[in-house]
Structures are given as C-alpha cells and as structure tokens.
Length: 301
Ligand SMILES: NC(=O)c1ccc[n+]([C@@H]2O[C@H](COP(=O)([O-])OP(=O)(O)OC[C@H]3O[C@@H](n4cnc5c(N)ncnc54)[C@H](OP(=O)(O)O)[C@@H]3O)[C@@H](O)[C@H]2O)c1
Image (cartoon, rainbow, N blue to C red; front, side, top):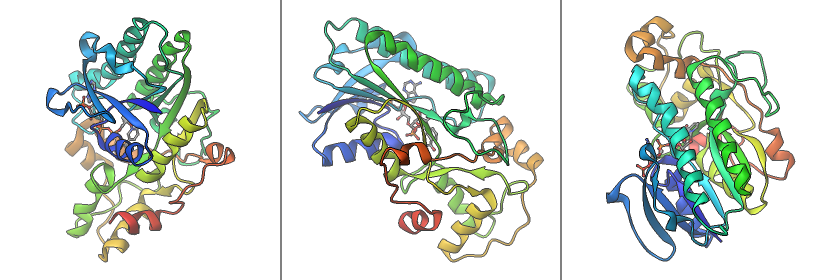
C-alpha cells in the first residue's frame, strides 16, 4: 500500500509517517518547502504551492489513498490577514488536490481521509457531541471548519470516498498544545483558564495515528471524532499535568480578559468547550490505548 500525505512535516504528519513506514506502508508526501524534499522508494517528497494551485501530479502515482493534514497553523496570532490564511490555506489545499487529480488519467486514489477539527461544534459546557450533530458553531474556528468540511467533498465527483476526522486536542511529546501547557505549570505559574469548567476533548497522538490507519485499512467513510473516550475539564487537565510533573497548581484561575489581552481573539482556543464522543469509531472496533488522561500524561511527560 502507498499513501499520499499532505502536512507530513507537521506534528501529526511526522508521527503518521513513522507509523506508516514501520507498518510497511510506502509514503508519498506533498510539502511547500524545497528543504523538506527527500526521495527514497518508501518516502518520496513532492513540491506544491496550494496558494497558486501548483502541484507535482507525479505525487499521486501508485497511491491508494490521500491523508490530508496540511493547513496553516491556528496557534499563531489571529490578525485579520492571518485569519484569512487559516481558512484559505485549507480551501486552496483541497482545490489543488482536486485540480491535480483531475489531470491524472485513471487515478488509483480510492479514499481521501481529511483532517477537520472538533472546533466545528458549538461552544457548550453541557452538550455531548456525536458526529451526527450537523450544525456548526458560530466561532471563527467553527466557521472555518464548516467550510473546510464542505471543500473536502469536492473530491467526491472524482470517484474518491470521503472520510472526515474531527480531531480533538492532540497530546504529543514533540509539540502541540500539551507542550505549551507544561512550562507555566512546571514553573509554578500555571492555572486554569476562566471557570476551568470548559471541556477539553483530547487525544494521544499514537491513538490518532492508529485511528487514521484503521480508517484506511478498513476503507471506512463518513465523519469521525478523533478524541479519547474521556474528555476532561480545563481545571482537571491543568491539575493532572501538575500532578504528573509533581508540582502543585495553586494560583487563582486566569480571567478571560487577561487572556484576551495576551492572545487577542486567539484566546478563544483556551476557553472554548466541547465535550465530544468517541463512541462511533469504537463501535466499529477501534480500541484506544489511552482512554484516560493520566495514562496519556504519564506516557508523554
Ligand atoms: N494538533 C492539534 O491539536 C489539532 C487539533 C485539531 C485539528 N488539527 C488539524 O490537524 C492537521 C494536522 O495538525 P498538526 O498539528 O500536525 O499541524 P502542523 O504541525 O501545523 O502541520 C501542518 C502542516 O501543514 C503544512 N502547511 C502549513 N501551512 C500551509 C499552507 N499555507 N499551505 C499548504 N500547507 C501548509 C505544513 O507542511 P509543509 O511546511 O511541509 O508544507 C505543516 O507541516 C491540521 O490541519 C490541523 O488543523 C490539529
């Protein structure tokens, strides 16, 4: 089997590539950076520039599926121009994949598995979201995700089956949200945000990469939440990280206005609340290795 991965140089992409190669799955990948191009039989890089719809269509050769993980990071300051980039990069990426694939006669791509995000769901401290909740929230991220998911469907007319994966907060050793949360807690200046009651639906990176490969091997289509079975509140997350690091968390909660001053509109990332269900993928036989936060943190920290 050979897969084409976009965003292969990112946090999730790097872990996924490693797992593919360990399992004997060959990888083609698309990158916007010449410096990231490598070329071996099992790991072949191809250049693209989605902003101008440029793509090396040799990237599709021999591939059975595309795993789309690319997109401008949401953890840079949300200026009006950068907000535009967060959305447009995702739409350009899908448009470029579509235009590229249209040029390939008798392509072999059976399935597109694309990242989406649980940011799709409305902000709520009480709702428990399953995949059949089809009304997006009103926040900037929810609106981006709604348009992103609609764009994913644009590959359907090319005979490609579609799988959308609404990813939760990815916990990893090499970067991402957890590694941003750790330093203040470690140096005793960490505290929950706001009431601390907002739900954080997290997933260990190993479970996420296993789930992506599960969806490919079984050719499963549809929408799937990629979150661990036990989401926690922000208060519980911060305290659990403190416990794992062996340090107390004693400071009062950080009010919303302070975070708005520090992060601007991006502060919504740490205040939004989504309690999301993992039951659908589990009902298809997927088993999470990291069901509880404590086990994930003990593995990662
Ligand atoms: N990490 C999380 O907690 C989380 C949560 C929910 C959803 N997600 C989604 O899951 C996907 C993977 O997440 P990640 O954390 O691995 O992301 P990441 O580390 O930021 O990596 C994303 C990759 O996308 C490519 N990229 C960035 N800007 C681009 C642009 N303008 N045009 C084309 N490619 C661009 C880059 O690859 P090159 O430099 O090689 O081109 C980069 O390595 C993302 O779409 C993200 O939105 C992540």
